[in-house]
Length: 106
Image (cartoon, rainbow, N blue to C red):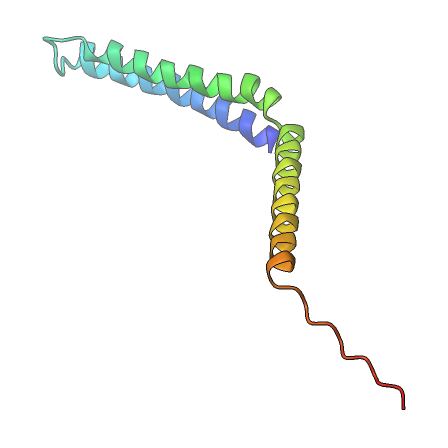
């Protein structure tokens, strides 16, 4: 999973470079929308999303990796067990189980 995350990040970087070149060519060389330099704003926005991707892969994944997921899962399981025990206790208190009949000695 970690290798796939890094691979997707590098792929994102390559597409960012290719896309940036294409956008600048469209805006400057082919004069598409020549009145306004929209390509730079588009590239800046794309770069922002790329930086978010970097933070997600290299920073947040370290803090919220498999160990963090396991701890959160164990906390949820513990809460569920406590709730089940409380509900079971409440049910037993409000609806006691019938006592089995004792055999009378003859």
